[in-house]
Length: 86
Image (cartoon, rainbow, N blue to C red):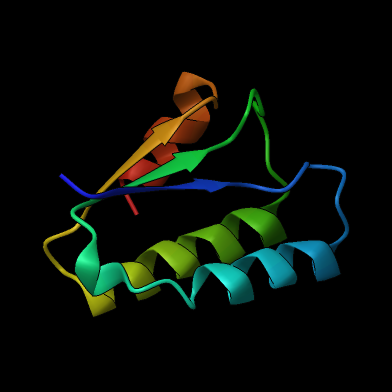
């Protein structure tokens, strides 16, 4: 299984940093991966704007490869669970 891990920026990173993360992440060839792991590296909370941006990235990945599995690590259960329903 080909896996790609996306490590999110710090929650203290400004919005421009998060947009750079998303723009970089959108350049990966997701049609070549079977699984994406979003690594929150111990974040338990995301501001609404960052959460929406991340949800849009996940949706964009699913539009490229509808068969791709997306999982979350490093966040608390509420954060991971919320994004799993997106």
